[in-house]
Amino acid sequence: MSTPSVTLPVASSANPTSRAIRIFLTEIRYEVLRALRTRAFSLSSIGFPVMFYCLFGLMMNRNETIGAVAVAKYLLGGYAIFGSLGAAIFGIGVGVALDRSAGWLELKQASPMPPLAYVLSKVCMAAAFSLTIVSILTLLGVFFGHVQITSFEFLRILAIAALGAAPFSCLGLAMAFLVPPASAGGIANLIYLPMSFLSGLWVPLQFLPHVIQQIAPIFPTFHLAQIMYAALGASSEGAFSSHLFGLLGFTLIMLGITWLAFQRQEENA
Image (tube, rainbow, N blue to C red; front, side, top):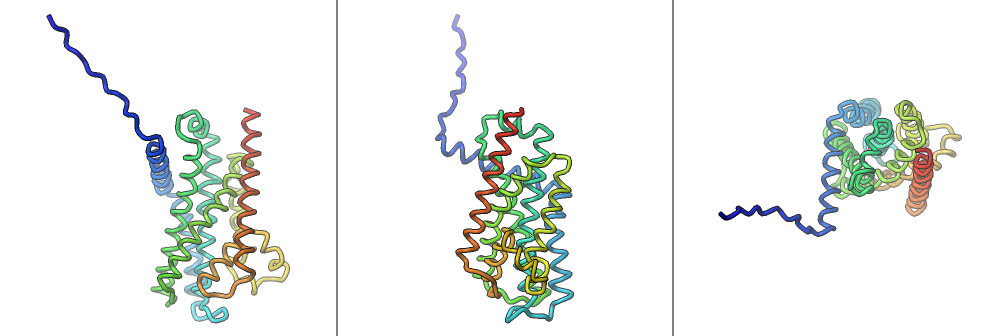
């Protein structure tokens, strides 16, 4: 009597690089889907810059100019940065803080998933929302504010908004590991709103008091906004290299604070 043989499936020895890429892409996909399905986040992060732009850029100042550039086009750059900051500070700062309180972050650390995949998925989510916000603002400006923008300018501001998600994401990570999860939302607003106003994103800096003009360069939003204004052909302050170094320095500082806060949390665990 012959015994039937059973063939067991052999684990495929996939390329480690392609396997890691699949993990990263899967994590990014589900993070973006989770953010879209969280209506309180997705609607507010997109709705606030759109609402303010419609009010101040398209309704109140639609026939005004700043230099040779229409206010509607100028504020398009400011509110694009405002939207990028909001997507990062709430999507990452508040999101990671809530993951900490729910124990989800510890579960991610215990899983075989590369640790960088979690962080990268958050950054890509913030970048995706930034691109969405810029696209919506541009369409509103073109169709309702008669904004004249070339395809090259549009691609430039898309790239600036996407790359700008990096320093803002680092700010969100630092906040997530420093503040109590229960108060993360309130502290995010205390960072989000004053930083936007003091950087001249809502009202051009030349119309604000001199003291605000003096302190504006300490904020990363100021440096990114000046790069954005230059890309739109509007007047900007400072050289491109100084703004780039300012953003890089801020990013490194926030990464250092995040690492120190994370190490302290691991020691106290």
